[in-house]
Image (cartoon, rainbow, N blue to C red; front, side, top):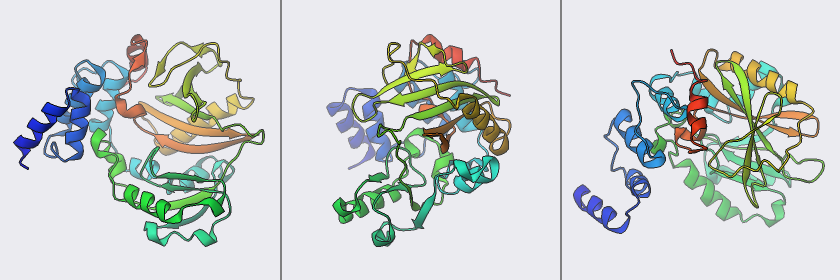
Length: 308
């Protein structure tokens, strides 16, 4: 089917421009479009206003600017979920790094017999996909897991959002230690927003597998009335971590020792008992296409990113 015919079919069966754009993108319809053109179209379809790369003002606009003009080669190994562990260990201490058990270059090489009863499988170049949490190895459908991981290994998840820092990662599958909260509850993510070297906000995602919510807090753990992507609940009090000061210190220290002077980066951690464990480094929060509620915070956080 020719390109013109594909476009006609897509327009006929999908009136939602954002969904249609995603569909055509995955078919490679926009492969020759420049990053500026492509991201401008994706941005407007996703957020409802035009992207201004010449004079970016909002948080999301500046994230798009950083994708195109702020890229550095050293970011690739920092975005690599496998390689970054050693960098983090050298930077802030290996006690903050979740132990890697084994790694493989191909899904069919995964040695399940050598793995403990509980573990986590990950691809080093993906985000929420390409992840398997195993709490009981005896119940694993191994052929299904191999198929799932093989698909993830052969998919460039960065292309649709033009996050080239992730597309350049040398892909690998690895197994790491299964981490459980001693109380039995789900482990909460603490995603620290670092603006020009200073930790300013902490995003906490909770009830992720039942009724996903997201609350934001400032450095003093005051609730901040905005969210992105998921609902927020001011009446749901997320307990202030006893290690809050240490969490903020580690986020700033890690940013300083890895990315250096960068207008914005997100440092993700878990708190398990008394341990603060590194999660990942995220360069473009929500790929720069997550709506803010209320909208004014898109500009408020954008003002905090100082581009050079």
